[in-house]
Image (cartoon, rainbow, N blue to C red; front, side, top):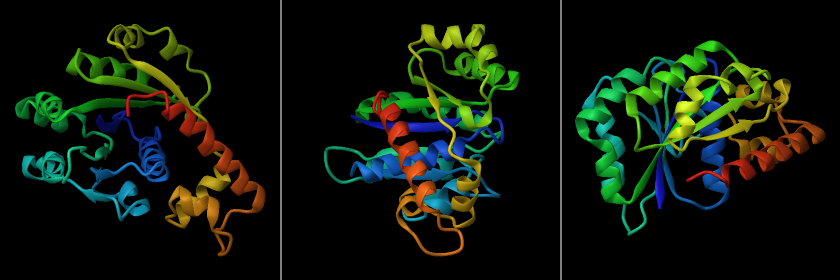
Length: 233
C-alpha cells in the first residue's frame, strides 16, 4: 500500500519541513514514487529543496487542495504513489474542514491508501496541546505518528506524561524520535537549497559540507531511515 502523509504540528519552527524533506529523500533513495505538496505560501521550503517532486497548494481553496486527490486518481498503474503534504503553521483548521467535507479518509481507503497524520513536536507545552487537538479532531481512523524532534529540545517529559499522548497511543499512535543534525551543517544545506542527497554527495562550493560533516549527515540519514522503516509508509 501507498500512504498519504500530512506532516503537521501546527506550530511554527518545530521542524515539519525537515521531516517532509527527509521523508522525500527516503522515498527517492528507496525508489518509491511519491508526489509532494507544500502549503506554505511565504517560504515554500519543501518546494525549494525538492522542486522536481513538490508543488504548492493553497489551503483555503478546495480546488487547490483537490489537486492532492486528483494527482492520485490520475496516476497510472495499480500502485499509487505516496504523497507528502508539508503543512505550514496555522493550516490545520482549513485542511481539517476539507478532509471532513470531502470524506477524504473514505476516498483514500477505496484507493488502498493509508493516511498518516504526523505530529512533529518540540519539547514545549504547545506541542502537547496541539496533539490533543489533533486527536480530538480526527479520532479513530488515520494513523498517528508523533515525532519528538531532538533538534528542538531534549526534555519531552511533558509530552511523555500527557493525557494527549495517551489518547493518541490508545488510537494506535507510533512515537519516534528525530535525531539532531549538527546546526552548522543544516545551515549550509539550507543556504544551498540542497536536497539531502546533494548535501552528502557534493564536495565543491562555498556551502559544501566538509568530509566529516558529510559523514555525520550520512550517519544521521541512516539512523533516520531506520526509524522510517518502522512506520506505515
